[in-house]
Length: 391
Ligand code: BJ8
Image 1 (cartoon, rainbow, N blue to C red):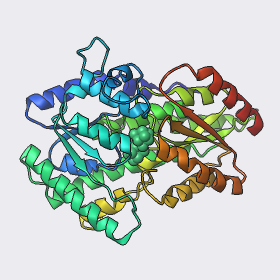
Image 2 (image 1 turned 90 degrees about the horizontal axis):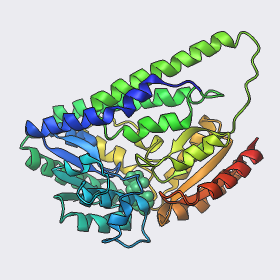
Image 3 (image 1 turned 90 degrees about the vertical axis):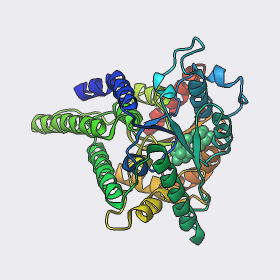
Image 4 (image 1 turned 45 degrees about the horizontal axis):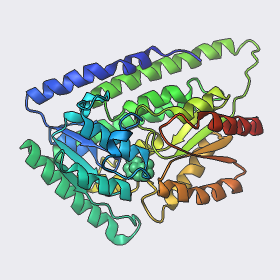
């Protein structure tokens, strides 16, 4: 598979982004840290603040968190908490951006996150958006809209700037443009074989809430141009007979893979599969639906964000429908169902997902794992057998 130069650019963007945030802070811009897709970035940007993601995907800060949190909770929660409280001062190499935020905007989703946020307040000011967890009930939308209004007020207080309707509309339009770019990239992955592998796409997915919106758009444009070029070159070659071996087309579905966590995709693609879609918060859940630009912006945001099919919602049939739709659109051969240890929501939903896929004749391999390396070999053997079955 081709090496994409734009991905080197994205990989090397970390230091530039940190310097940019440091400059912004010096100039008085407030920096907001988030953990979840349910927090609308549009409101943060419309208030004149900047945003960085705080989800931890690395193993090395987990032991720090375990001094405060139980061992048997999800590694994403422990890694994130460890990174924030460590903040580079206990000998473990930590990402410096964790110490740069003025306000954490959290959300009531799973129990582990909710309770972790209560502890976090001792380290950094934290504002929590409450979520109605039955999104299809008639009262849910109004409740969520009221929560978003409170969040907007908190942002205005933080920055001292009014969030105007015009500014919100501008940010909605801009973030919709980014979502459309992701759709373009994913459309290219519908080809067989896809011109880009899943690990490469994951590199930009993991950076999407770290880069500034402008840098993200620029990076996506560069990547899409390169991937389109691969296709154009292929069409030329395809006029002559070429033997293209079919690699099993895999969809990864389940928990997010925060930056630093690429274990399972690496195994899948090293065993001959190619990931063509991710039903995940580091995947389609982050960009699939656009915000309606024709409506009152706060209502449009509430309508769009409440529909995110996270397993914290109940019932969550929307997620099953999405998985089936993606499986058809991307011509999926098999699903790798990815759960982080102790994430009960995604783990329990696996049963319904498996039943729905079975009716479509699509096999599922369930992998439950953490951020450590001790199970790499064992996962490798299971993925190997799965690929052989799909070939
Ligand atoms: S919208 S998936 S980002 S909550 S993996 S911490 S659910 S125990 S990350 Fe999430 Fe928002 Fe939902 Fe997405 Fe809890 Fe599960 Fe851990 Fe999770």
